[in-house]
Length: 242
Ligand SMILES: C[S@@+](CC[C@H](N)C(=O)[O-])C[C@H]1O[C@@H](n2cnc3c(N)ncnc32)[C@H](O)[C@@H]1O
Image (cartoon, rainbow, N blue to C red; front, side, top):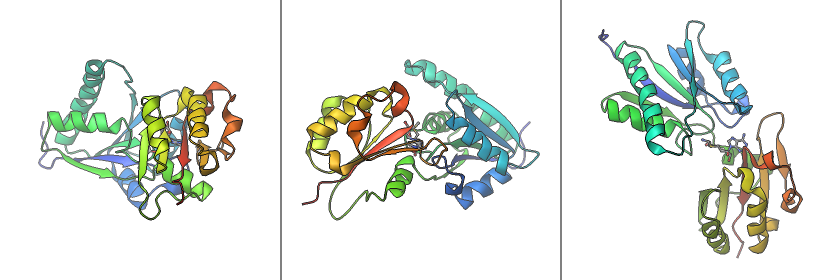
């Protein structure tokens, strides 16, 4: 059955893990949503996302857990997100306002991007609003008072699983670099930063805003850290000052 008024789909960024870094707009949208899709995974950060939803959703709001499809096979991943998008489209047509919550900012390395594309494929005229969130790198910069962009220096945000040669080339330019999704590559990334003579300009921040927050300004200490140390972490390399 199609309602006279179709609903809106909101992609809501809930910031990196500190409940005070949620925007007023995110709070308003969550409290007015009829249904909220909550990504679920074994990562402890999902407790934060689920707590935000619990704290701000209306008592009548339906919460739907969504499992991540991190399948390497892009066809499988696309199939997974299309199925979720179909479900959301049906809700929108029934007049529901539907939100999907995501860590940090929804448009930066987020599963929201897959869902958004799938939804726009299925229903190009669907009403979609993305609510920006404070990204992990902004929170990490603020926690460590690290300038991100200054003067004419370029700043590059890069997924650490990129070709390590590409990261080495980037570090050699002396511009500012933000490394995200470091995971098991931590020791290799630290070695590249050391080779680029950029250790004094670098800082590591893991689990920013969460109880297990870990800040390290001496990156050499991370060379032999346990394998999970690089999970949910960013490294900021400030630009070389001329
Ligand atoms: C799936 S991406 C999500 C990025 C997110 N959309 C954003 O704007 O920050 C996950 C990566 O974000 C970074 N990240 C997310 N939350 C973080 C936090 N609380 N502290 C440090 N890094 C975090 C890590 O690099 C992690 O591997």
